[in-house]
Amino acid sequence: MLYAWVGDQKRAPFAKGERTTCPDCGGLLSAVIPVENTPHWRHKAGDCDPWSEPEGPWHLGWKEIL
Image (tube, rainbow, N blue to C red; front, side):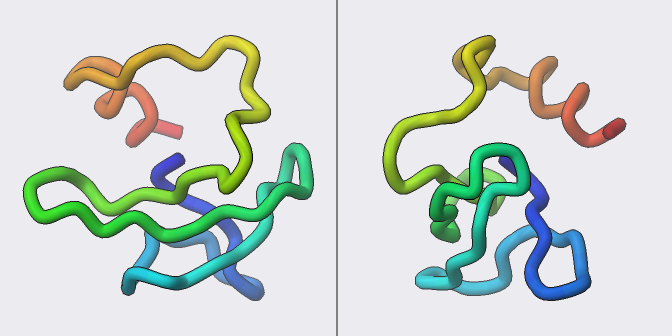
């Protein structure tokens, strides 16, 4: 997940260790700040999206539109 609500702001993570909750399932999201990839949020326990798939360039571009 590229963006999540942190307080009243929808944003990408700024720093490793940040946490927030998923607006869909209420589960814990943790910030992932990779060296070579886009910073994003990761579900602590699995993924609440039953349609999830590996993310390639097309998938990331599509998510940027939302």
